[in-house]
Length: 398
Image (cartoon, rainbow, N blue to C red; front, top):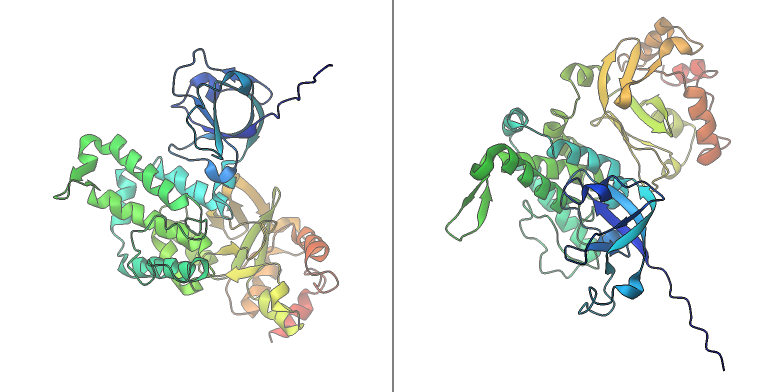
């Protein structure tokens, strides 16, 4: 009788690596393999699920990998609790590199931006942030946690407490509105403080706890509040979002000149590699056409000068402005879109927006693309061609 040995199922999962890990692993290419030269710890830890990936350093790479030889690694996995969602290994094949944004969904791009800043900020940045009073913002942040708890775990013992310094509350298999984002931001700020201040970054209080330098702690709080603004929208109002974001916007490459010129006039967002702009006043036009507001493909947020998506990651995310001129809008990644590229003169565009009494706005060269995209995805048969119907739009507001 011949016995066939069943093929062992390959273990696949996720590995987060930074420059502080093995440099060869950090620089490994997709399709390549990495094998430790010995069997000593630290071993590679492959998480079976994205939620299990812990970010302790920033920046880093998120790799989808396959364990090479789990049958020969029983010794290093000995003692693990049954059903644990990770595997220790000595070698992996790199199948794919993923965007680190997916670790912080649904607002991953915003959180990675905050982390990029946190990992590189200097004392000038900290001093600038220290000028902001955040008492009101802290209350908003705390209340947002309570509102989240009411949904996730209505009987939680943590309800109606002060959450102004909260990073995580485990409720109904979740830890926050943004997964591990708050904990990661706090940790990265602390590590940056140590790099800048050395041993002066932390002091020990009477309870033998480490306390972060006051100014850096203040800066950390501001970044946490900005993170809450990005993904606590169902728990806070637009006015509260504006309060949470004001200090962050001061250091996020948004100049006062840009803010004064844009706010509250223009919504700018992207689809793939293209950027789109629609004046917030168009919302009133859509409402006048009796389009169900619940089906809107975007919601204007004048306080952020941008867009926040409501339900779907397919809706492009808010983008920051680098700088702004009267005839050109320059956004992140230095992509420029000019008014001269469309079938209206700059003067006509200015006159149109002035007629709405909202100041100078911007119509970009991809309005036609926006129109087609919206028809295909959200408002088929309803959305007007914004170029052809510009006169009708103006008449609506006269």
